[in-house]
Amino acid sequence: MPDYIFETSWEVCNHVGGIHTVLSSRAALMQSLNKDHIIFFGPDLKERSDLEFREDRRILRKWRELTGRDKNLPKVRVGRWNISDSPIAVLVDYSHLWADKDTIYGWAWEQFGVQSHAAYGDYDDSCLFGYAVGQAMKSLYEWLSPQENKKTFVAHSNEWQTGFTVFYLRAFCPAVRTLFTTHATGIGRSIAGNGKPLYDCFTAYNGDQMAQELNMVSKHSAEKQAAHHCHCFTTVSDLTARECTQLLEKTPDIVTPNGFELCSVPQGKAFTARRNKTRQVLTGLYRHLLRLDNTPANPLFVAISGRLEWKNKGIDVFLQAMERLADGQIDRPVVAFVLIPYLDKACWTKGNVTVVFLPFYLPLNEKENYDNISQQHIDRAALQPLMGMTYYDLLIGMDMTVFPSYYEPWGYTPMESVAYHIPTVTTDLAGYGIWAKQASGESGFPPVTVIHRTDENSEDVIGRITSTVRSFISLGNNSVEAIRKAAAQLAKKSTWEHFFACYEKAYRIALSK
Picture 1 (cartoon, rainbow, N blue to C red):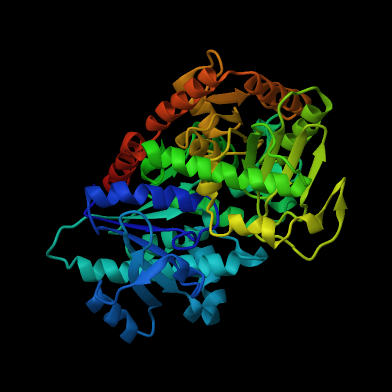
Picture 2: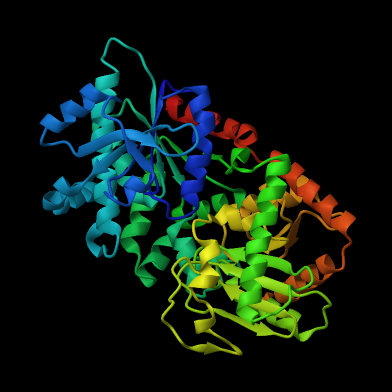
């Protein structure tokens, strides 16, 4: 292990997506190996950051005071990230760089070939943040390690948003070795999200050419050059490593798969109590939505979650599978929960299947009808039991989950389900799906059902989801309990304790350069 690890992401103290889960779940193990020598750097987004950040002016006090006196350095706040084992977090204010934006972009073009001229959207915030983090890391390195001390430092940047951290350190602080991880290539996600056949035409795609066509030249350029100029380049799965080789023209030095920390999962009687409580809440919501007088007979709760990417996350085929399930004869009510933010539907019902949309921000004032269920049925009485419940609080009450992803470099959602003893469905276009198939096999009804998915077989995927749910409905209690135990056992194989060795090797690669 290096003496110090600086790690940065736009998602430090800022929960946006899966990278937050990667970093926050890995932090506990890293703290146990080298306590308080892992320091996370995130954007200072004020009130939003403060949801997860606890300032502590005693930590790195002299360095913080030093940066406060230097007008050329970013303003920082130092404290603890409110996650397991509370690692040190530095929130960086990058507002001082806006006046110098064009100069910074010119420098990045001349030194590293980064094409910022076509920038739009969140590019400016991301790159200026990355540059400011580089400034803060250099300053902290110089304060922690005077020349007479032979300490080793690695700076780990996650995703294109922190590519400018790599550039800054390579140019101005070469003693700090740089590690860059792409969790999903921007251009690969864009190709898939724009309805183009990513896999059938994979070897014909040129990343630079597609970036021009899809209007993402600047982001692609920042990501590609960070991959080429860092000391060690990593990604999260063999699936994405292939993507990097083709689209970024750089093969990762090592694959660093994502692990999970099981400390969030309750054990024994606490698990059973929490699961029963959630099922009572969800059953009550279901009864309210359908205006049922009597409690339905043991409904099957199924869920899908993730970002609002209809094709990439497989939301489209999931909903079609639920509709096909409703067209058939099933003798047990099925309630499918869509746990995805910003959807504006309430729910729909057909036959013995109900699909409930649970966005994080429900538009309570909408009155549009969806089939025979109207938006007005979701009122404050129905929502009250859900207040304060986290995603994991909801997940633990499910019977199964479905994540039929088309584009999924790793896939935390099925991994989280298995950790909570929930059998799940994913695809072989997800890194976790490939790993789970190798780790558990598919004898009988496996804890992870891995569906083969291509550019052309959506109908097969829909059919396989439908048949899997039907098969699960027909299982007896003993079989279901056996599957749930198998899920819990599989989860133990994918903890950070097993996967962190890949990171240790990545650090050694970076330090050897």
